[in-house]
Image 1: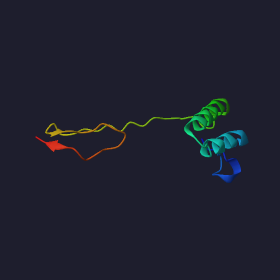
Image 2 (image 1 turned 90 degrees about the vertical axis):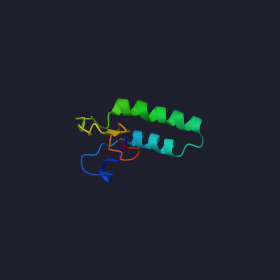
Image 3 (image 1 turned 60 degrees about the vertical axis):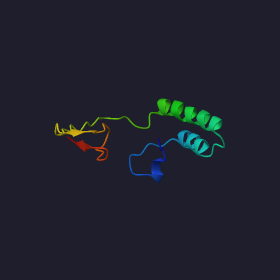
Image 4 (image 1 turned 120 degrees about the horizontal axis):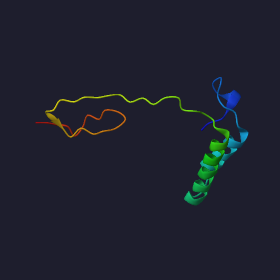
Length: 84
């Protein structure tokens, strides 16, 4: 959600209001004020739209039938696997 504009990589969004709300969220003293600040960041992000996702990547994965305990996730996890 960074919108630092000229201070970032070229083409980065620029919004002083979104940056101020992010700073308020980072400096929140307790969980109640952090939740309130996070809600404000999200509302401003919906208004300003700092980025638009253009794709979703799903990596197809196959495992041998003799393996069990495979964990499903965004990356491969190689612990807890048993060979039958």
